[in-house]
Length: 100
Image (cartoon, rainbow, N blue to C red):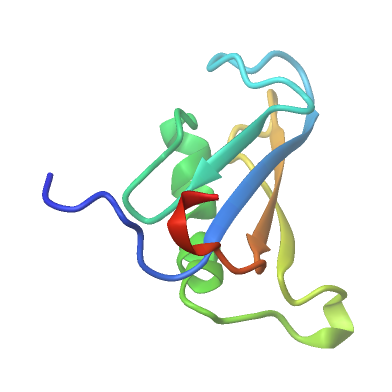
């Protein structure tokens, strides 16, 4: 794949809850770096659920202030019996030049 640098903001996913048993092995506290091109090992079903919100956060969109923090949202997996909840957060600190 040409180029490894991602466009836009970095988005971090943190597993906040697991109801039942996640067949993909996600556990509360897992942190996953995500982008439109990188699932970070996230289950395909959960990635499908988060994708529209992930793209919005990665490319500068936000949520209404009345909802709370415009850089954060919680999304549930489509498997309601073994539901995984993930918090997506846009990471807004600037990257430092020179790789530090």
